Amino acid sequence: MTTHTGTPEHDLSSLRIRDEQRKGATKSWRASFFLGVFVLLAGIAGGVHLLKPRPEVEVAVARSAAASKSREALLDASGYVTPQRRATIAAKITGRVTGVLFDEGAHVQAGQLLATLDNSDALKALDTAKADRDSSQAAIEDYQVQLKNARLLLRRTQELQKAGVATQEQLDNAQTSADSLAAKIDLAETQAKASETRIQEAQQAVNNCTIRAPFDGIVVSKDAQVGEMVSPVSAGGGFTRTGIATIVDMTSNEIEVDVNEAYIARVRPGQQITAVLDAYPDWKIPGRVRTIIPSADRQKATVKVRIAFVKLDPRILPDMGVKVTFLSEEPLQANAAPTSAVLIPQNAVHDDGGQKVVFLLKANTPERRAISVGSSRGPEAEVVAGLVVGDTVIVSGPGNLHAGQAVQIKR
Image: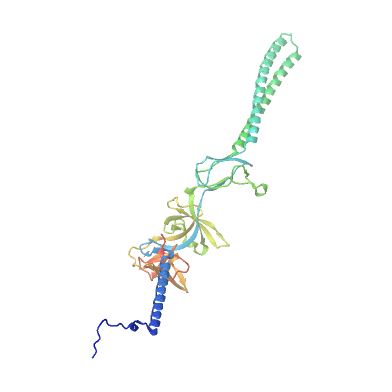
């Protein structure tokens, strides 16, 4: 029997990769590669979505309707802030502007100089009238000296005529000379008075070359510049200005609204109102009806009503849009039944196929909510069902806003 000794031999054939194993590994590698690419693309898409800015929305918080009013709302109307005293300042004469001494927004006092016109011609006329007056006064002084001498000669002639030395003819000539000089003095005095009148007229023409503020107010419009021609009437084919500036007395601001004539019986002088400016929708301004214009507009079927502010504020500017709620005279009863109604801005309410809906904001995403709307209170809507006090509703946002969309509150 033969015994084999030494190092064992390795079977290298066992290390060979079979074809079926090679194909399986290739498939596994490809699957892993495509899976990694898919995960990477999904991550990039998710990151882009997260980095994409979310649309901004404006929100408001629903508040109790019971605590928000002390009087019943009878009527709503829209109008504008209008000043009682607004004046377009114009020149009394046609002339060229030589100076403009104000800017828009400037506060001016009554009598303050606003602009000047070319006054060279008026000054010449004034100088001429003064020269005529001075000439007449000099002539008067000369005639008075001559008259004094003529009267001395007249007395001397009278004495000589009594003594039989002078003739009657000499006496008559002396009397005529004195009377003539007295008449010349009267004429010169009349001419002097006429010259004084012409001086006043010329001075008024000079004064007309200055434009002054008629009352205290604020300049809201600057209508002419240096070098332009201005005139109290339209002239020159529209190239001549008819005004220098427009001044408004801010202390005379009031509200002017048109009320449908079918509801004018609900409005009375002295009636309390609540006004809300379009520029400040959260600011409620108290006021009272000042007057009802006793005339209707047949085309619009409305009656004009003027309302005075209880207290003026610098934020109230002429021609601002305003919504007015006319209130009842009697306050609501303190023991009235409690109500669960809430108030939200009118802009938060949407009409979806006849159903009133709002978008609530929860966790930075809108949630659609159907509501029941009661009466309107100016810029606010009374919601009697669907909302509770403290709910946050979206007032304005993108046109394609939908439930579940990620949004952010506008700061």
